[in-house]
Length: 500
Image (cartoon, rainbow, N blue to C red):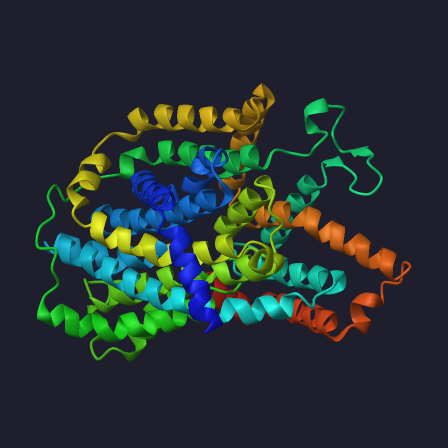
């Protein structure tokens, strides 16, 4: 009964005309920028993040969630139409989706992706609504040692699920933690690591770092690959799947939803892993595995469902524990902190309208996507024909205006440029920036809970081992790190992410 009452509160909040407007705006803006090849959900949200800070907290987070769904939809559109995934989790969709497009079935491929995403989003939204409250109740019993250990698990998992070298991913986490220390000591008020720069007294600007490392760096990378973009499909027709399509896509959608819902909760990029896992499962159980890579319907339906389900369930650790499951959730937590909201289990009890409003907006946002974006396919195709060198100055100007509007500080613009170059350099060195962002967001929280636990235990580090939950979480983190470093596991891990 409590669940129904809470959902009623959530839909009343999310369906208000004011919040519906911002959900709609987020979905459209997310798709508009996410459809540009190579940018992806993280960079899209990083670039659009500043425009949400003048809104009410509920409207801001609902709009960011809408941007997330829209950017993901845009990523699958580019994967199908021009074989360039808008984000990592859409890489698998490109394998069979593009082949369907080459056979003149681009409309059916886009519709299958949209239907699978909507179904998976609906199911995973229900799962979030069901499992979030009990997890929140458990989290309310956590003390500082448990939170410290939980964040260690999150950071180690982000390393395990990051692309490329484990050592590089660890380096990115450490760099993020160090950047998070810049500013003022939380207990003594002493300035530290600010290089004597007054603007760094309150720490590095989260928005400037996110926009630079993800937004500007992605723009620089895309300028290198501009010549690779070729829009073969000029007009998309026949959006309705055939009866045979429905028969072939129903089971993969169901399996993809289950896989994505389970793996999306994992910190570090479970949604990405879910799409690869779904594709592998569908290929192995298929009676015609030879069709995969040549335009198999299951190769589009399964991964797209898994991708969207994973994206939805990644909200569970963010809403209940204040732990980001991926870089997008890290951006969401950053937005909450800037809005004056302390992420964690207290959000559900202290601000139930916000907590349940976000959950209800997940379903509303997915419904908007399927009702609005399929009729707008022609617009997205035309957008893809615009040369990128004509678009990027407008995108950079938009980012700069947004970042400056947060604090009206010119220093933030220099920071964006600096972190843009840093992000580009990291990309050239094949260092994924996602663990860096997770480390930067979790760094101050990690330090706070570490020092609080040490103060409460009078400096005894055994406090982390004497408490069963904390000890269990630390053992889990150690096990994950050991397993991912095993040669056989490392080889399989490299094969999973080879598409990138």
